[in-house]
Image (cartoon, rainbow, N blue to C red):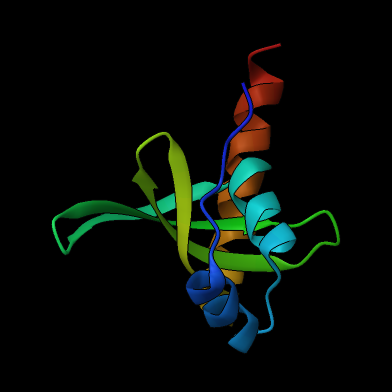
Length: 101
């Protein structure tokens, strides 16, 4: 099942200010991201994730569901402490996967 995304000028322009393209944000949330936090903002559930693009860029992405589509609220390059956390969690996930085979 593929994820459908909700893009418009507002969110495309917003993430562009952070140097992120829609394609990169989509990759970060579809290529095994790690959920960092859940929050309720303006009455909707938002998920804060860190994920990696095909180009190896680590992004912090905040998204929410709008109907059957995922709406990227914001996406920024991950700060150093979150990059380290992601790499640690990714390694732990890989270790668990290797142990189960």
